[in-house]
Image (cartoon, rainbow, N blue to C red; front, side, top):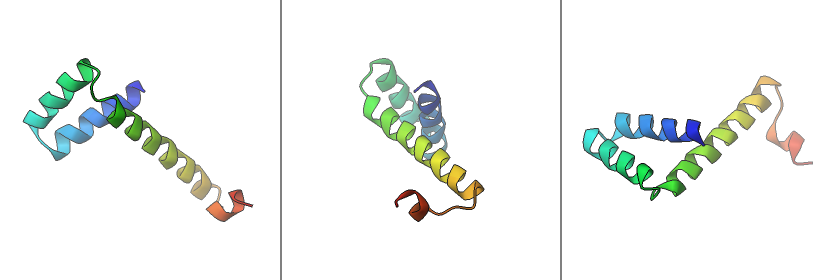
Length: 65
C-alpha cells in the first residue's frame, strides 16, 4: 500500500495541481481517502499481471480455460 499511496500522490500532483494535491495529502493523513489508495493498488496489480502475460507471449484466454 505505501507504493500505491506514493503513486496516487504523483498522479494527483501531475494531473490536478497543487491545491488538489494538498487536499489529497490532508485526506491521506486523516485516513479519509483509503478507497482511492486501494483502487490504485488494485490497478497496479492488474498492470503487473497483464505485463507478465504479454511478456510470456500468452493471451488472457489461456488463463481462463
